Image (cartoon, rainbow, N blue to C red; front, side, top):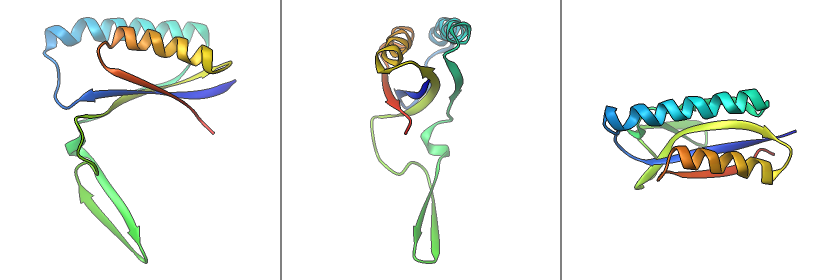
Length: 112
């Protein structure tokens, strides 16, 4: 089966705990559903963009800078790696993830 990356894009900042708690409950349930179906491979949330370090090689030097590389309204906040028979099956999981995390955007991309 092919593997797909389900990327979760979100605005910077954390939601209030009373908003986040039911979302995390539903996300845990969806992750369990994916595990039970044999689709779940790995998932993780990321710290805020300000915690990022960017490395860029130029010649023999590698420049390290703090913070995100781009300025944007939304950032990669987390991801799930799944395995699915085809894109349609991956999109079905992506739809479920989008429903749990509404109104956040979910991008589905196959691994090479």
